[in-house]
Amino acid sequence: MNLAYRDVRHNLFRFVLTCLGLGLLMSVVLAMIGIYNGLVADALNLVKAPQADLWVVESGTKGPFAEASKIPEDTREAVERLHGVSEAGNITYQTVEAPLAGKTLRLYVIGYERDRPGGPGDVVEGRKIVQSHFELVADRDTGLTLGVTIRLGRNRFKVVGLVEDTMNSGGDPVVFVTLADAQTLQSQLAPPAARVQAARGASAEIAKTVAAVVARLEANADIDAVARTVRQWKHLSAMTQADQEQLLIKSVVDRARRQIGLFLGILLTVSAVVIALIVYTMTMEKLKQIATLKLIGAPDRTIVGLIVQQAIALGMVGWAFGLALITLTKDGFPRRVLLEPYNAAVLAGIILVVCIAASGLGVRAALKVDPATAIGG
Image 1 (spheres, one colour):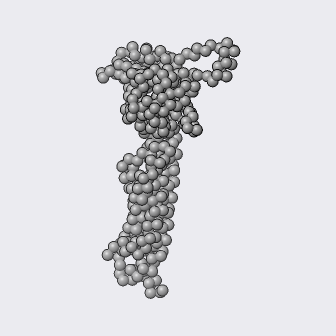
Image 2: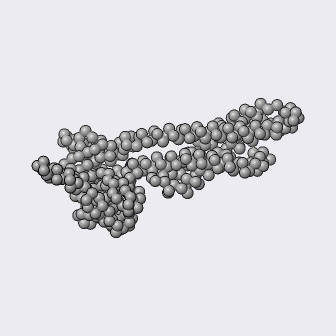
Image 3: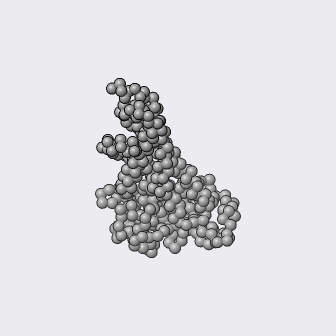
C-alpha cells in the first residue's frame, strides 16, 4: 500500500490547491529563465543578421552595440580592397520613436546598403527593399503590415516586407531602411533648428558616417590577419564575429543576466521554504496516524517514504502546472520568452533536490513522534 497516494486521495482538493500555488511560483521561475534566453537570443540575432566575419568599428570603442561608433562612410571601400575580403557593407543603428495610429512606436532602425552585407535575413512575407528611398522591412512585432506607411523623421516609409524574431537587446523591434535614408534620419534637423543653423552660417553639409563596416571573407582567408591589418589603421578597430558575440554577452546583457540569476535564486529559496512549511504542516496534521503506524511496527523508512514522496509529488505537479501555464501565456509577454527543453529539465532536477531537502523538517518531526501518542488520544 502506498501511504502517500492514499493520503493525497483523502485530501485531494487541498493537495491540488497547494500544487496550483506552487505552479504559479514555478511559472514565474520559468518566465524569468525564458526572458533571459529571449534577451540573449534577440541580442545575438541582431549580431548574426549581417552574416559577417569581421566588424570594423571606430578605434577605442567596442562596436555599435556596446558603445557608439562612428567611422567615415568611405571606409568600406578601403576594407573591400584588403586581401581576403570578398565583400563589405556599411551599416548604421539608431533608435527612433514613430507615431502610429495615435500611439508612439519605439523602433530600432538599421540602415544598410542594398545588395551588400547588413540587410534583413529571410523575409517571411513581402519582399526586400528594391528602391533607394522610402521603403522599409519591419519585424512582425512592430505590428506593421504590408503596404502600411509610417512616418520616420520628416519622411514617410512604406512597409514592403516582414521578418521575424529581429529585435535589439532592449526588446525594441527592428526595421530596415537603406543607408541613405538612415543617414538622413540621423542628420536631419527640425525646420526651426535648420533655420537657426542657416542664420548662424553653419554649413548644411555634414560628413556622412556609419556605425560599422561588416565584411565577409573568402573561404581560405585568415580572419586574424585581416583584423590585424585593419587595426594598423590608427582610427579603426576590428572584431571577429565571435568577439562581437562574446562582447555582447559579457557587456550588454551581463547586468540583466546577474539580476535575473539573483531573482531566480530568491524564487527557488522561497519555493523551498514554502514546500518545507507545507510538508511540515501536513506532517503535523498526521502525527496521530504516524504514531499508530509506529505502534503497529511500521519501519521508519515507510514513514520517511510517506513524507518524501508527498514532497516530491507537490514539487513535480507544481512544476508541471507552472510549465503548462507559461507555455500557454508566453506569447502574451511584451518581449520574447524563449524556453528550451533543457531549461525545463534542469528546473525539474532542481525542484526534485529542493523537495527532498525541504521534506527534512517533516521527516524530523515524524521520527520524533512517540508511539504512545496513538493511545493517549
